[in-house]
Image (cartoon, rainbow, N blue to C red; front, side, top):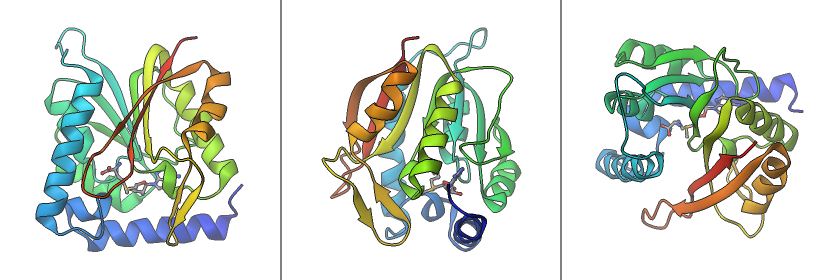
Length: 214
Ligand SMILES: C[S@@+](CC[C@H](N)C(=O)[O-])C[C@H]1O[C@@H](n2cnc3c(N)ncnc32)[C@H](O)[C@@H]1O
């Protein structure tokens, strides 16, 4: 498991990025300008809504958890669509800014492996976070915890490349292949339903949808 100094360094990286970069560049693509990030977020939101489905009802909203929500862009958008959204991030700066923005979601400060909830979720979403978790033990603990938060027949939606191998990029990214996710999640009762690539420029990342069957 990652040692405390490494955790502190990672936390400091995200806090600084959330403090210094605008709403979209801090959680989106750091190499894109504002219009590029607007398109990047809008396209992915459209895909996400397609994956989640078009049902929302004030009487029976979908319970959605946005894990590693950054400043809450997706969390707010899903709340606007009528879903009941909880969200959390490990960066105090991100959570403070998300709370200040309001818009419906309930925010907590927590790491992926540590977040607890009194209720399970229909959809647990984790967008562009897991490939920033470089330590395999921490990544595995994070996935196991996220699974525990999905109700039976609910879905876990995570993002990464498809593979075939492990691909480190720079200091803060390690892409893992689909098989790594399957190996971790299938014994826990999840089935890999589909991979939907972002389809944004040269980006190879996409949404992996896992359905909890037991
Ligand atoms: C690229 S941003 C994505 C933010 C958001 N999901 C989005 O798409 O706008 C990555 C986020 O993951 C958070 N993060 C990184 N490691 C984490 C961990 N172990 N637990 C919770 N959040 C983490 C960072 O603080 C950062 O807000």
